[in-house]
Amino acid sequence: MPISPNQGSTGGGTTVTITGTNLGGATAVKFGSKLATITANTATSVTVTSPSGTGTVGVTVTTPGGTSNPLSFFYVGAPFKSSLSPDSGATAGTNTVTINGTGLSTATAVHFGAATATPTVVNDSQLTVTVPAGTAAGPVGVSVTTAGGTNNGLSYTYVDGPTLGTPSPAAGPASGGTAVTIPGTNLTTTQSVTFAGVPAPFGVIDDTTISAVTPPGAAGAVDITVTTTAGSSTSTGGFTYIAGPGI
Image (tube, rainbow, N blue to C red; front, side):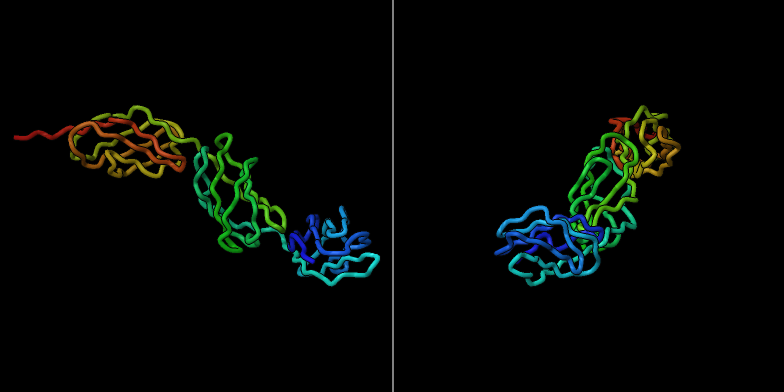
């Protein structure tokens, strides 16, 4: 006489179906000592709503013909989430987030605001999930749904991708060392600035301004690329290296 699912929330409310033979006219289904609510019954199955409980209990079905042997049902507590990393990313989604906590082994869904994604369970204390697209930049609540219920408490921030304006100055010596101000938008989470692919020291002044110091480069126009947690933006030919004099 199989039982499906064989686990559910300690708070009860799980829809459970018990299959077997001679189950028609069931008068009682017990989870341990507690009665479950019967919602459907045929000769080969009984569907019930589980009562609250803890640990592992025996489930029995009583019909006019007697009481069945017990089947094991496992009560699972609600998950606990301790951390989420990274806690921000592009509004378009697609990046991978790791969630740590306890009671995560039965996770079936992770909700980012109104959007839902299916996680990959690593073990009972960790899962990974691909972030779904957000509707707008800003923070959303993150919740995990398991057999034990749903737990909230974490936040994820969607960030719009960066845009770049015209750097100033737009030219400097090929030897490097020019302090360049780069205007734009959504620059707060800048992770790197490169000139022709070469990393440059930088500082974030505010969400619309970055200051960077040019590394040495070959003479000519080069691209400036700024990478944030939400993606990258490139100013094509945004800076021109000028060769030094030769005698």
